[in-house]
Length: 454
Image (tube, rainbow, N blue to C red):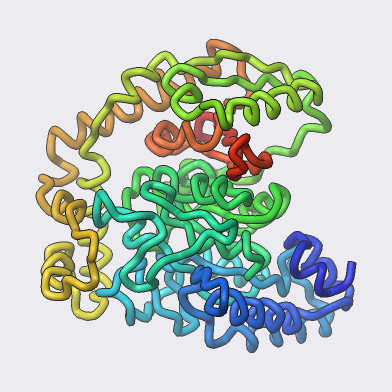
């Protein structure tokens, strides 16, 4: 393929291979993506996926090219341009606002492990993507497309990122618009998988603890993880292989010493795919998308998979009704630690952030009800928090994903769109969101594959 086609339609692996062969260069790739961002992100389409461009992107690309000329290739991502969600700290001079106007000018003094490992893999940082403010934990009516620091992100497919559609909207939109070869997002409950399916890109959220969270603005540490937005599953696996692994600065990673992905099977023959219906698939299927989901199941069966349908979670009904204090309790505790350590704009606590917002109401047009609810929590030592966290794990994992998989001998579970997001988030489970065409109403349709942690 020619260079224009490569950058617009090729995979990260293909771009890296072309750079290695000398068919193009990392600097040429960076310049192409920067020009595309300039034309479409802030131009007529006004997608607004990119929060900031790295001031050292071209220098990093030139350095990657010099390494190749000297005979050193770091791996398949060498020289490949990518974007990072705006809650990831870097040392390139880019701000890390987590979408908040209060943190708009915060320039970190530390680098996230994810960013460091991608640098070591030879990938070139283009910049940061816009995100829903504080990973969508500011107001219970704020749409996913909005942040005080970055404004409104537009879905390149002409749709709106509405309420609850996940905070990695900028990363998903950037991949869909081909502003980069791949992007890093983060997920606590639905923030990679949901924008992925609504943008028709691949989104992979690994098991919590596979990838270090060091140097990332937290939301719920027991559920937070970095994830990948990409044009294909192979690229997502490639990126995860580069960033995963133990990190003493995030001891959750020590629970998963074998961090490599399992090899893909030669075929789907005999692979048992379970379909949780009750209080899961049934909650999102309708006349418009029901046939699209049935089509996916038929295609998998034709490819040799054994479709176990239904493969219901024993706890599904109870999980659908559960309300928990885990989000707001962990958010306050974790954000207080982060702000006390970094003191962006002099803000050293959640209380100080709430006060700053109250003094600048234009920064929070949807209010700050979730921030205030978090501020009122009693802490992670409180009996209510401990009971809720234990119940979350029981319903989502022990009596949920694990119970369903073992009872039906399923290798993996499959849900339409992001019907399993609440369950997978609480369980810390791995998820792959896969585009699957459009539904009967012409909207993007996708499925999520998930399993128990590990």
